[in-house]
Amino acid sequence: MRPFTYERAGDLSEASRLGANTGQGQTDAPVQFLAGGTTLVDLMKLDVLRPTRVVDISPLGADLAGVALTSRGLHLGALATMSKVAEHPDVRRAYPAIAESLSLAASDQLRNMASLGGNVLQRTRCPYYRDPSWEACNKRRPGSGCTAIQGYNHNHAVLGVDENCIAQYPGDLGVVLAAFDAEVELSGPSGARLLAFTSLHRPADGEPHLETNLRPGEVITGFNVPAGAWTRRSLYLKVRDRSSYEFALASAAVGLDMDGETVRQARIGLGGVAYRPWRSPEAEAVLVGKPLDEATAKAATDAAFAGAVTHGGNDFKPELGRRTLVRALLQAQSLPVSEAS
Ligand SMILES: Cc1cc2nc3c(=O)[nH]c(=O)nc-3n(C[C@H](O)[C@H](O)[C@H](O)COP(=O)(O)OP(=O)(O)OC[C@H]3O[C@@H](n4cnc5c(N)ncnc54)[C@H](O)[C@@H]3O)c2cc1C
Image 1 (tube, rainbow, N blue to C red):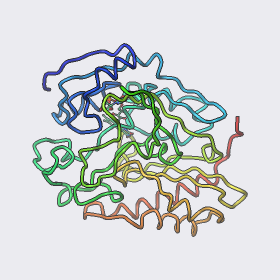
Image 2 (image 1 turned 180 degrees about the vertical axis):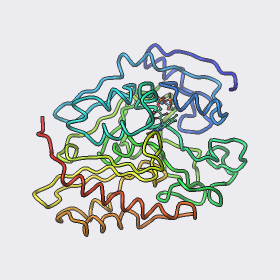
Image 3 (image 1 turned 90 degrees about the horizontal axis):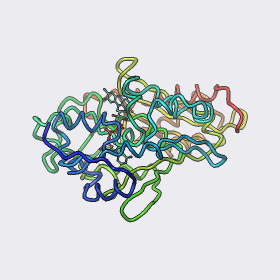
Image 4 (image 1 turned 60 degrees about the vertical axis):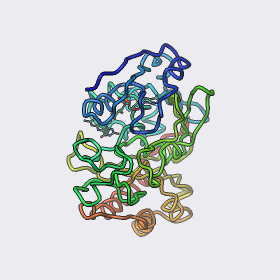
């Protein structure tokens, strides 16, 4: 690991001041915030991330680790651990898809250490990104090319990719936050602001080294997830190469508001198959106003994967993604639903 300076932020304004030159959102940012460290330290050891300064924001956990359910929705502090939120009774009852996405992620040890803010900012698991001995990786070395396109791309993305990068977004929680209209609370040198979660991660757009729309020095302080009937009738289904301690090959976050057999509203997120946390308004639109059965579920999944682009090793993904989503929709339909609080 390369030498770096370590500093602890006592409060938010100190964090923003110390992080003001972060070049944040870029792979090669010279300053990085440290929360649980389970992505950051990993990638520093691999020599993928090379910050010269690490700003520890874990002391802010006293103020930024809360979980609160209100009539407007759910608030999650960015420094809450994955395990705390996964086990929280209000989250399990009113937002089961969020609890499931967290409890199906990583391992007990990692979930006890890792924060929600760090989770949504985790980096791709593309093997060419994570191994600097590969010269060509546009995400790591802008303009160098993409080894994965002609290489080993078994678990690469099929949605939202371009000719510069086919890296998969590997996280689980982000898929649910994208589907459920969540917003991100930010605090930075020029004050606080809110950002739609679907605008946090940038599309590939020829510049895959620019990963997020965070501004320099901005700390994620929390997430707001609105209330809606679909959050209670919700689930997260994750399909992977082995059944635990593994990233998704395909996953689906589904929330349904039903009027008898008919879909009043739907929320659909897709994971494991896309460049960034993926919401599918196309699939949602197919379902609204229709009875939910296998035929309508399949029609929705066809809409979701209409734009899929594969590269050989991941040719199986659109079909796996479709089947995952059909299963998730039919399972969500038959869920017993808790009363609104
Ligand atoms: C072996 C292994 C298996 C895993 N499996 C899964 C899985 O199946 N599913 C899944 O979803 N995840 C998985 N993960 C990823 C894991 O969930 C993340 O590493 C973890 O959530 C990151 O959180 P952290 O607090 O440790 O972040 P850190 O490592 O501290 O930070 C990660 C990044 O986010 C930035 N950051 C952190 N917090 C903030 C903030 N509040 N504001 C601004 N920037 C911030 C940091 O600067 C850094 O760039 C796995 C990880 C490992 C190592």
